Amino acid sequence: MGLFDAFRKKKLEDGLEKTRTGFFTRIVNTLTNSQIDDDLYNDLEEQLILADVGPSCAVRLVDELRDQVEAQHLKTGDQALKALREIIRLEISPRDEMDLSGKPAVILVIGVNGVGKTTTIAKLAYLYKDLGRKVMLAAGDTFRAAASEQLELWADRAGVPLVKAGEGADPAAVIFDAVQSAHARGYDMVIADTAGRLHNKKGLMDELGKISRSVKKASPEASLEVLLVLDAITGQNAISQAEEFCKAAGATGVVLTKLDGTPKGGCIIGVHEKLGLPIRFVGVGEKIDDLIFFSATDFSEALLPEVPHHEEEAQ
Ligand SMILES: Nc1nc2c(ncn2[C@@H]2O[C@H](COP(=O)(O)OP(=O)(O)OP(=O)(O)O)[C@@H](O)[C@H]2O)c(=O)[nH]1
Ligand SMILES: [Mg+2]
Image (cartoon, rainbow, N blue to C red):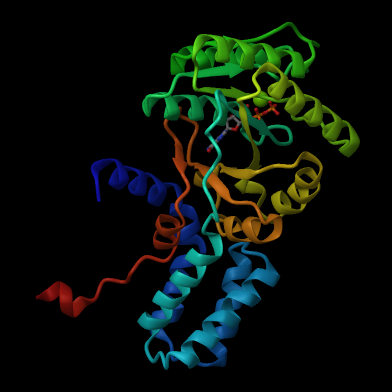
């Protein structure tokens, strides 16, 4: 593992501290200290539900584990733990990668109030700039007076340019300007903020439809990803709220923020199941470098770490 991967993994482990110590350590203990029987499965199911995995998903994961234990004649808790880790990994593995092939690659960031959209945009700018991409931001949240200024501060911190307009301007027009300017100036990416007030489904659809059309109009070579930001602290609520939002908005991926502030990190598993959308990034703090590319392998290993064996340790 390279230094960068190790750093990312450590950050994720730290971000998942509350989730792990809250619920998953108990799952690991339950598995490694008990016999594999019906009581164990019931206990596991309960623990997964408490961790906000979601009832239907918890039942399915445990059923899958039961099948595998039988089919592979697993005997020990360690083997069952390993199997569960793999089941979770497969469950949350993204099917594909984000489409960032366009010129520019446009990422539109959507979600309800206060979930962490603007902060996530700053983090994305920082992250992609660090990877050598030329990034531009678009202040598409023209609804709130302070929104552009907030994004401007972040843009300065990340060292990337920002396209903005006055309060009440048309978000699609701001994003059009940004994409056109990025295309003309050879920028690789445009990351666009949006207002979180769009509770009305029709309004949201119309607005996002208009934005995607203006992205294409500004540059026919542009690609578009729509990232839905969800706040992990709200756990299962985030999921039900997101279902509606997501249907309306045609999101292509999810960013789960504030994982550091909740024991309910298990909701990642439920989010993936309910929305059928790949998780792309997780937010693990308020600082500009507190965003991690989502990896199903790292996530499942951080949630259900291997238990050190005392005999081996003693050797
Ligand atoms: N602990 C923690 N806090 C976060 C994270 N992401 C965002 N926040 C905090 O969440 C709060 C709201 O973040 P914003 O980025 O302003 O959220 P927003 O969705 O743009 O909000 P509106 O524009 O009002 O809709 C801020 O205090 C952020 O610092 C995270 O991953 N972890
Ligand atoms: Mg905002």
